[in-house]
Length: 448
Image (cartoon, rainbow, N blue to C red; front, side, top):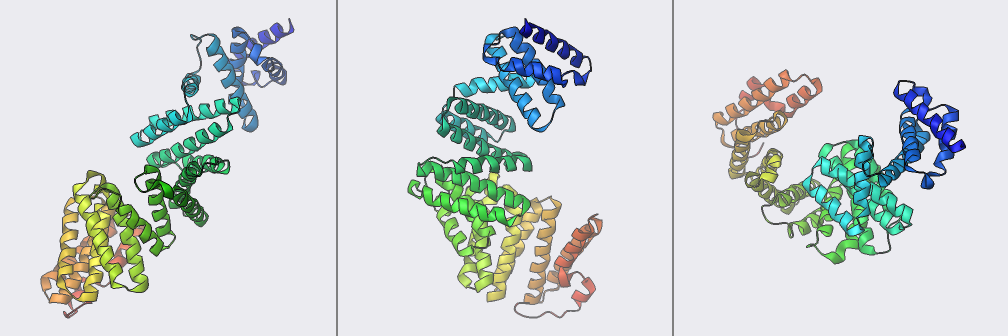
């Protein structure tokens, strides 16, 4: 009788809440009655489970922090029991989705879970990723309930990896923070199998690297390097043909480059180039990074071989950007870097052919590029190249071309509402900015 009275009282509270009385579900007596009934949850019949589920569903809206988490957890468990008892029972839409995820999770093992996560990541479809995350969350809950500790760690690791992939698609920092938290926990409880542990270290290193690229925190870059080095070491027996070796190695190269370990970065990136199909977007991206490492080495040590290697990599990346659709987005960036490297070669050798190649590269890219920022960087390079060509040949047409590019930059800068960006572009063209002053400079021979 007491149980029936409690159910009747809670049903009345639910009706009052639905009519606008928000305090109906937070009343201490009502909460106490619900807790008494919740203790009997495994034995509740359909009607009692439904009343209690809706009570906790409404209570979760009105409480915060730990009370919110507890009410949500109770509502989820109760709605799942309601649906188990009555397949036609009406659930809140969110619970419908979660019940479907729980049903899918019951069919999973760790291999199927990995396949689900891999498919969602490759499709780069946010809806598929959300679904994978929901199923993996339910799979982890089921593993905890079953005492399957090793499986729980795998499901959490896969969820963290999926959250990192979701960040790469949507760019939301909170997804990245959740990824780092999940993957850190998974690595802390990593299995004894060295290869599996190395994969987890690679996933965590990737998440730390993305967060450093987003927020610039040095500690994230240090953590990324530590995790990726450990992954690279653990995955070495797999060899470069295994995808599990390839991705962490690519991320290790990027992290080493960002950290200024240019010799080590160049060595890692060259190993990657031996694996990537020639003229693929992946090869173009690796050439791009290798060029950055080689240019930094040249600037630090002034070794001609480093400059030659930089130019070769940039030529390869630029060529691929013209032919491979997946690499087209990097064309402008690579073109202006190639022009800068060719200018360096001209300053070393004094050969005009490098200026001709630089001018042709920039001109071709400007014809295809319509993004303002990219065009401005290319115009800066164009002005530099033509100004150097003027000093090399004494041709006044080269001076006019340099000034024309500088004038175009100044017009764009004047129209930019961001004053600091405007100043940046004006300072970038340096001595070419004042057309009259430039025209008075007599042509010279050799490099500037």
